[in-house]
Image (cartoon, rainbow, N blue to C red):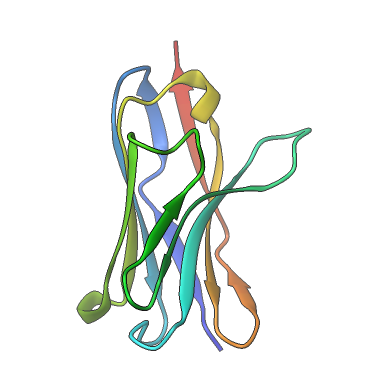
Amino acid sequence: QVELVESGGGTVQAGGSLRLSCVASRSIFSIPAMGWYRHTPGKQRELVAGIDVGGVTNYSDSAKGRFTISRDNAKNTMYLEMNRLTPEDTAVYYCEAWLFREYWGQGTQVTVSS
């Protein structure tokens, strides 16, 4: 069982930055894969970035070069550093972990104003 709690969302102007955090209720050292997803009304939830237990990362095309995913095993926390934000990044961002099944956080709202 893994409980995930996101934080760090908010409202920012275009071009600004935010850092999202996802704290897990247990050690993430052995969680094979974790990721950040986002959802906008009327669209499917999409993967923004993923990171595996070895630190290998992958990004959506829209996130490449602007977002950085990382995990701090000592703090049981995963991060998403988001730079050069645009209004198209406005969404609810969800933390996800895979440990024999998927676990999801409750989401954190990111709003980017033009």
